[in-house]
Image 1 (spheres, rainbow, N blue to C red):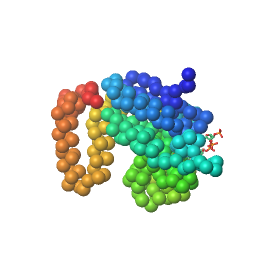
Image 2 (cartoon, protein in one colour):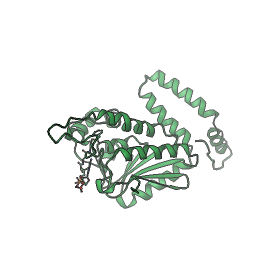
Image 3 (cartoon, helix red, strand yellow):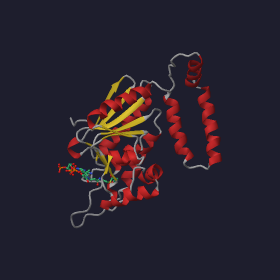
Image 4 (cartoon, protein in one colour):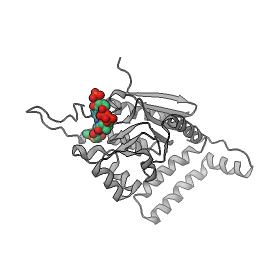
Length: 267
Ligand code: LHQ
């Protein structure tokens, strides 16, 4: 039987998904994209999971779409017709990008090596991006005549502003993790040897916090990006109202007043 292209493990309330095609720098195949979405669906449905970590096996995080996949491979023989690669985005990448942004718990990308093309933007769509110091981010699309996908057109200008987003997308140069941190593209760059431990420690810390409020914060940020100030204020009020009725607020505020450690349970 073929080895799974996504490995799943769980430690306490932290579920770790590992992209597992190391010989191709974990480039996305359709099978892998499907398995990744299924694994995220399973984590979303499992009440014991309170934080998800996504990382790569081997020396890379993810080199983006596997360009040798028959669905995207260019026509190299006379008579071959070009394929509509939009179908792949509609059928696989859009549902995956949406799945990450609608997870009921925080999602951490632990970028252990190169993250290129859709691999970079998949990581940047996660809630917190930690990267090893030898990792780098490449908007590889322009090199092959494409534009940033997997959320890149939306994410990049919002994360780093239009000028830097265009720099990254047009020049498609390798952006080292330390620079990605200093320009605000990612949360933090850490020594390679510490990446897995740091990512797990962060995930364990988060899993003891009010994760429902964190997922709602991500949803509110995303929604506010489509609104004017007054609409965002109204949305905050409606969402805060719901959180105020939930157990975590009752527990968090009571624990503060009673000077004791809170125990959060909502998801
Ligand atoms: C690969 C790949 C790869 C196959 C490394 N495919 N094998 C969405 C929908 C529809 C269509 C198209 O696109 C998209 C979104 C996208 O993601 S477009 C962007 C696709 N990705 C790229 O263009 C990146 C291509 N890869 C590279 O530029 C380099 O491999 C990077 C800079 C990532 C790493 O370079 P190196 O560290 O020098 O490694 P390498 O190039 O030697 O790669 C190692 C192996 O991985 C090698 O296989 P081999 O059998 O020769 O050892 C590569 O062929 C394979 N590989 N990326 N995307």
